[in-house]
Length: 197
Image (cartoon, rainbow, N blue to C red):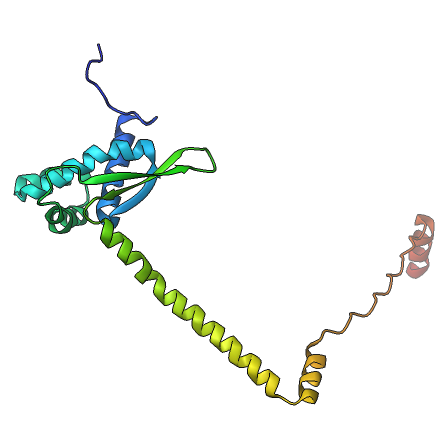
């Protein structure tokens, strides 16, 4: 009887499934938010919340237990130093799942899984990272605008000569290749005999 055995298999064998869920939990701890399928997010949510509960204990035994599950020492350090202290006042429910709709390729239900306490940090961090790109684009558009003004200030004769110089000349028509006519085999042998004499 399979009473109270609620393991979600995810179409994988036990070792593969444990490794995958461990890696998903590590990515969630490192990046605070990951995009994955709904089934995987629901499977990793209990593991991630148990890791935060271990992180709140701050004992050596808890740290070693978390390391046995996550298998990455640097991620365990982030968990105990940054993630767990943010959730110190919360009694549970450290993560949330935000549905995104179906994926185009195979219509799998997609979602974000993220920490509840760090949602504001993720939202504020995203625009700051994009700001330098906008500044670079603005500088590029200003540069193009100044170049256009410089071209307009040039004398019309110079601009016309520059345009003529930059225009490509049409390629000359190709001459048809001369066809090679094969000599009959008897004439070739006769010419070789004459050359030998």
